[in-house]
Structures are given as structure tokens and as C-alpha cells.
Image 1: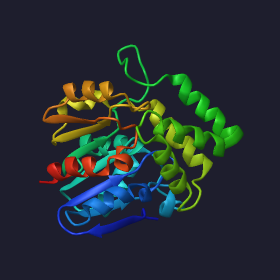
Image 2: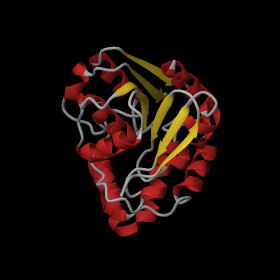
Image 3: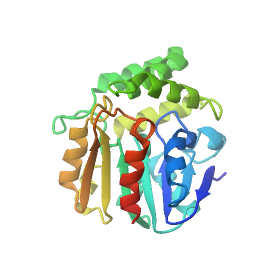
Image 4: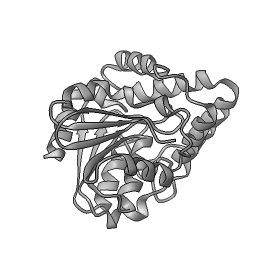
Length: 253
């Protein structure tokens, strides 16, 4: 079964890939600001939202291939958080795209001996254990981390909670698969050979993806730039949608 992809607007093509446990509807503030400037292809990843019953596995290669089959060649791909891993994997494996936008995303989410800006691996283990014992409570803790640090944390958390189950509940097995992807993926080796321009958009107060991790990735990547949104947390497209839309608009041009 193919993935659910909503198409909105007209003009240059922009593919939006959401983060862990969410769905494409979370991008509503961004879609509203960009629909007159481009054609948006808003993807629900496997097991999430309208793609809940898709038989595409939640793996980088399978997701990248399935999305590439359903969106125009030469689009700009934009991935938020987990979606950024998929978009970056697609770019590294020569999926035809015009440019790449990494939105609060990093090639390696977990701290390593040679990667000081990642998250502690214990955090992922705690979330994995939480999925087994209280998956709803675990999701709520994750949303709180996403909103933490933003100048508009309460509003951001409310928006994330409102959207979480707006298209149905994701399967717990898929949530576990997504956590495993976040914990195990390390796409840094492919950065020096990235063949498309990239823009890395971060939140200055992001507690999940340190902007310094994004800066370190940019320094490894040719034709890459970084734009850090002051006062924003992990979801700047909710709290600073116009700023993010303007940055993406420059990339589309």
C-alpha cells in the first residue's frame, strides 16, 4: 500500500516529512504560509496518520524509495527530526531532488565518542522502556521535551498534543521502530559527498537536537548553510512559522 501524501498549493514542489509519533498535519502553520508559493507534498510516514495501514516498513531505505515514487523529481525535500534522517538518506542515495532542508534534524541523534552534541543513549532506552509500560505517558513526555525551551512552550505543547492523535493513534510497534531508527542511525559518513544544496534550520533552545550538532554537520557538508531561529525549541514551524517559511522560500527560489 502506498503512503498517504496530501498535495496542496501550486508552484515549485516541496516535500514535508514529519517527526517521530506525529503525522503531516503537524505542519499546518507552515502549509498555510507556503501554499501560495509552492506545491506542498505533505507525507504521513508508515504507521502514522493516513499511512497507518501502509505496508511500507519504517526504515530509511524503504521510506525514501516509497516517497520518491510518489513525489515529483526535482522537489525540495524538508525533513523534521526523524523525517530529516529519511530526507538525508534519500539525498545521500541520489534520489532526484533539487535541495534538502533539515529542520531540527541531525545525521546522528545519539552522543558518541566522536560526536559530543548528540543525546544521551539512556534517554532512548528510557523511552523504549516507557513504550512498553505506558506508551501514552511516554509520548506526552516526548512532546514536553520538544516544546521545552521555546518562548512559547505552553502554546507549542498544546499544539503538539492537539495534533498527536488527530489522524488516529500510531501503532506502538511503529513507535518502537522509529525510536530504533533515531538511536541507531549515523549518516555522518555520507555528508562530504552530498550532491545537493542543503539548508539546516535549527531552534536555538532545542533540547532534542542541539544547534551545535547541526553546525557540526554543516561543516562536514559541501554547499550547506545553517539558519538558527532564536527563542525557538524543537518545532520552530509552530512558534516561528513565518521565519521557517521564509527560509524555505529562499531554498525554493
